[in-house]
Each structure stands twice: as structure tokens, then as C-alpha cells.
Length: 397
Ligand code: ADP
Image (tube, rainbow, N blue to C red; front, side):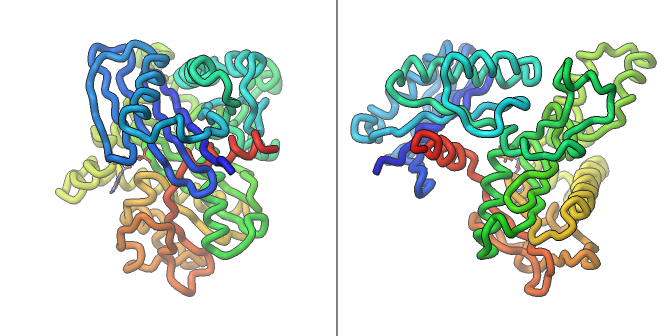
């Protein structure tokens, strides 16, 4: 049986790809092309013989995917020797329309194009990836896997903003949620680690990467999540503010004369850890904090305090919580964030084991005490594998 899926994640000036065995999750090869359209493109391909890196101009996403195909031939594994079952595409915004992965055809491309206003930075690049892969792999089924899809199970009281009713029908104003592929993968892995069926387990997932989001997952289904109409709402992130008073926009426009675009840009790209401490890379922020930098300390405290508030909120949304899961770059690696966010919650049955928490490992593991009523887990996310699994399941169904 052939279980290989080529997973493509097209960004505005980058294209990531991996050839994954959807059964085992093993990547036969993976690579990334960055700075597409700039004078110096950077291309890395990791295959059976290790990693190769080249710099040269790469004009378009089509050139990027062609370069990837050439790299498979030159550095392996040869695509002639591997039957690929499907191409799986990460698509950021599926609106209310897509609760499941979908086969890519002209109608789907039109529907994803209609959603561009909701994700102007991401959906156009994702569409370009689909078009290019359709041209270069015309005989393979192409599948779109949406970042928003896992959260389509949110009940109306969780996804509805208390704003004029017509805004939903006229402008699609509601909470959609993002990082769904990661939340789906990690919550399923959590059930496995606990030795139970996903349907029997309630989990709070904390995806803490450059972007950060929390999700409340009841019996394998997302029932609330911190990102909203766009990926700006919720937790504090590398450069994004997360929750702010929505009156900030009008106030700054009136009092500081800032335009809406300037405010939007500042909240998305100049806020979060970067806004507070001038640094959005968490490792560097930690170094500054350890060296006694006051701004870095405040940024860290605000970051962890926001996580703690969402844990409390989702604890009461779920009623009973079996596990709290930390994932992505910061969640998997920062013992300080895990302990600072959950410190003092023994009354809620949440007890971190300091020694287990301090161990660094790439494996999925528990960092709570044996007696903790709620398991605290660290689980590496693997969005590419999840996309491969979902794409394969669709083409096999
Ligand atoms: P993305 O959202 O782009 O996929 P990642 O999940 O890779 O991001 O997370 C990136 C973040 O993880 C960065 O802020 C980085 O500093 C942080 N990070 C990576 N490794 C560590 C580490 N060992 N300790 C603390 N933070 C880390």
C-alpha cells in the first residue's frame, strides 16, 4: 500500500514541502524555499544524504516547486521510485464553509478566493501553492487541509461575538480559530498517551510557537479556542498582542492620529513579546530575563499570566479536564513557561513535577506528578503528518 503524501505549505515568500509516509509520520525528504521573488533566494533540501543548502534567485512559487522536484532527483529520494497518493496543502482560512479537508478543484479555488479578505496575508499564497502543484503534478489528487476546520465544531455561544447581528451574515464576523491541524494532532496524541479513546478525554491544548493559541477539546472535538476572526486574538505571541480592549483602535485613531492600517500593523507585528521587550524570539527573551532585564521579565510575566487565564477559562468550559498539553517551540521547550503558567493550581488538581518538567526531550511525555488529577503533557506537534493523514484519508474514502 502506498501511503506517501507530498505536503505543501505555501507562504507569501516561502514554500515548505515534505514527503511523508502518512502511516508512520516519517519524512522521506523535506525542504524549504525562502525569499521567493527576492534577489537572493535560499533553498534547503533534506533527504537521505543529509541537508543541502543553495542560494540563488527563485522568481516564483512555480520555480520554487520545480527546484524542489529537481532536488528530489539530484539528492533523493527519486520521485520515480515513490508512488505518491496525494498532495496535501495547508490552507489557513476555510471560513464557515470547510469543516473537513476537501479535494481541490476549480470550485474550491473559487471558494478559497472568496475567503481572501479574512486572511489577506495567507490565503493568496495558499492558492498559489495549489495552482502551481496542480500544474506540476496534474495526475495527483490535491487536497486542501484547513487551519480553521478543527474549530468548526465550536458551539454558537463560543463562536459568536456580541456585536450587531447583521455583521455575521454580511461580513462573516465570528470566531473561526486557527492552528486547528496542530490542536487536532496533539489532542489525539494526548488521548493515546493517557491510554484512552479521544472520545473519552477532555484536553486543554496550549500551542505556543511564534503564534500562540489555546483550545478546549471535549471528546476529540474543539469547543472553544482563543484565536478569533483572525489569528490576532487570545494569547500573547511573538509579535501579536492577543486580547486587547477593542476600544484601543478608536482611541489611538482619535488621540494619536494613527490610521487603522498603522494600528493593525502594530498589533500584528510590533506587539506581543517584541512590543514589550523588543525581542520576539523566546530563547533570546529568556536569556535577557535571566540576565536581569526588567522589560524581558515583564514580557514573560504577561505571557504566562495570559496562558493561566485561558487555562482557568477552559477548565470551566470543559468542567472536567483530563490533560493540559503544551506544544510548539515554546510549549515543548520552555520548562519555565510551563511551571510559571500553572504554578499554584494544585487546588484545581494540577501539579507539575519539577524534576520531570526540567528534563528536556523530544518525546511526548508527562511532566505532572503521579498524583496530579489533571495530567500535564508535553507533546511535539507535527502539522505536516496530520495534513498527510487527513489528505490520505480523504483520497482513500
Ligand atoms: P512557528 O509558530 O513559526 O511554527 P515554532 O513552533 O517553531 O514557531 O516556535 C518558535 C518559538 O519557539 C520561538 O520563539 C523560539 O525562540 C521558541 N523556542 C524554540 N526552541 C526553544 C527553546 N529551546 N527554549 C525556549 N524557546 C524555544
